[in-house]
Image (cartoon, rainbow, N blue to C red):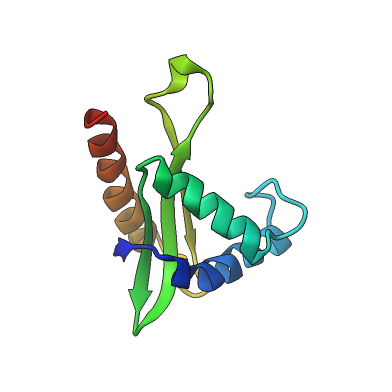
Length: 113
């Protein structure tokens, strides 16, 4: 697991597109384009929240991020976590790795505010 970068966004978009097209998990009707992924990535990382990728053999196998839950002031210390794994990597162990790495990073970020 490592912090994601802009160079990872095409792979991230590709993984997410599979979920948009084959499931209802995302609540999206069309996959976001690279410009939208760049906007989302920037908003998350500018907020100091984690956006991570898992790599296998130099390729993105999955990603996890936390994003603000709501914009109202009372929700300022809450975040929603999202985990998406590439086809063939959809196993509980991979999801657990993403979860355990992204959530402590989010808690640390909140404690530093």
